[in-house]
Length: 510
Image (cartoon, rainbow, N blue to C red; front, side, top):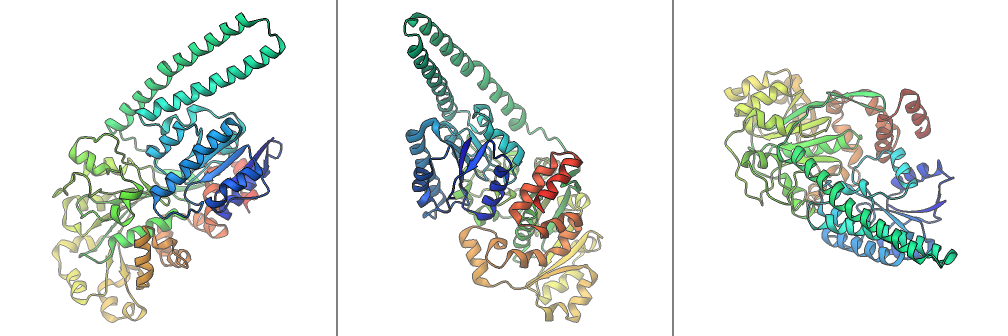
């Protein structure tokens, strides 16, 4: 039986993991304590001496504020554990990072063989993996194609040789005379290890890179996915403003994070025709320093070594422009390029932020393929009157897909005769003027306003008219029954199961 110490730092998350392990008491036993802050990690590990240590790099609090310092702190402790405990303690690393994040490659190079980098986890697969010996094949995908790959394979070879040495020691104790036979066995094992390094792994990695990354072979998936047995259709949302500073990006970010909190996969796509904003808004230089958007790669038609186009922030897949790289906004972009980027995302809900680019030809094409179009307006009388007078916006406003969102609208403004006359029945929702210090603090921390204190439920209620159009009622009902983290695990498990098993899972989590 293996003793498990959970160092996740979030009680809801910990409770979900505890429930999963409690179903397998013949395999696992839980430590008496849990770790809520990194400063207590070493002390509790020494006290509990677990066989398995589960760490979450984001939820486990740190005394450091900068991400680089937090990463170095955790890496230093993991190295210390590998030296002190070697293979006696298995470290499981939970995070929300891109597959090609260099930090994950570094973890593999120091011998971490259990990494879960998605915001959704299949608990059955999770338990199954931990019940079996660690396998290098489960983390090979996180390696870069350079130095860390060699280092990780050296680690695997070292572990293999150590196992052989342990075996030899036992044989020496029982039959000390057969020295010659023992040497022959050791020689054969070493030969197998070398052959494995040369032939099996490297070739497979190169083939995958050529097929998926270099040529951008886009495969359009089915438009329907089942979540807890509920069909959820893939949908595209177009968001923009008639003029600058009306808040299309602000609203897009709120909507994306609000959908992510339901457990439904969502992507935010910043139009390459707009001035880059999102990368700096969410501290891209700190959390995704090697990020280069797909639009940039397709438009510039070349790749830069060691750069990635994957970035997920709090459950939202972000596709934006990195203003620090060699990028200049084009005057226009082809629909073909936009479609390639759109379908490179496996998210069910894709939000495209076009800014003020309503007059572009590509916007007309995007409006045709979008399920919903949202135009964000503010209570500025001259700008509102221009909506009615602008020939460029006339056909767009008349579209049945278009809805208005009133940003910084009070109740008095909403009930004004001018607003009722101009926006009529197309005003789907209004947002109040949020407290300036709260908005500023969210920007200062590089996080979504949705996650600030007292805002999750408030924003969820404000955006309910839109989420009701995008998501089945059953999904929204399930969200209200349980916590956010519980709904993530619940949904992920049920996707993979038959109807009868899914029903059993529903009963467990009620």
